[in-house]
Image (cartoon, rainbow, N blue to C red):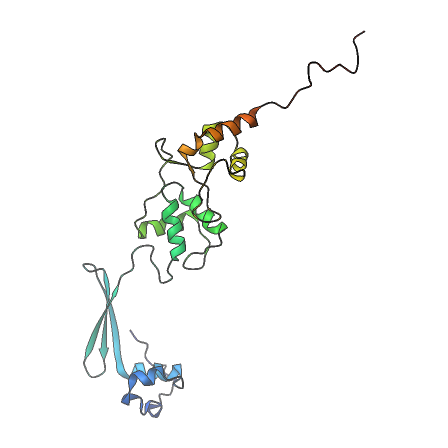
Length: 224
């Protein structure tokens, strides 16, 4: 319901003179103060009744005007997790791309590393990512599937029997191709690339022991 004028507030009808000729122009005019707009509303509106239509999922507002007329307004009721501040298209694209392979917590960490904020200008956490996924019908994280064409860095290292450091070296040397949704996101590696001859040769070189002293080299000291 619209607030009634304060008991101590003096209502000056002369301040509204001429506004009735063109209400839209009067309302948007830069010279009209907010106080004048409030007085205009109080002069025109008796009250506003709000209700919810569960069938259409709408909020129904009925404006009762002075003089007996009324106007019905309908506004779409937000879904759980929706709010006025919209999540950026960039954040949604990253969540869609990563959701099938990484947990909500990992996605949140990646978004924060990229400096991308939520629609309400907050940092991301698993709960906020989960809420956005549900609203946008994005499927959540599934545990690693052996038949999947993709591997994370840790999964690739485990399959090859090496450390993450070795995998990064293979990236840097251009031996093992990898993919990132955007800079800062976790790496994705194709399973077929892990099985390439180039990768196998690089790992074998890495596993070779350091060169030992030549057996033919004379010892500095002879046995006595």
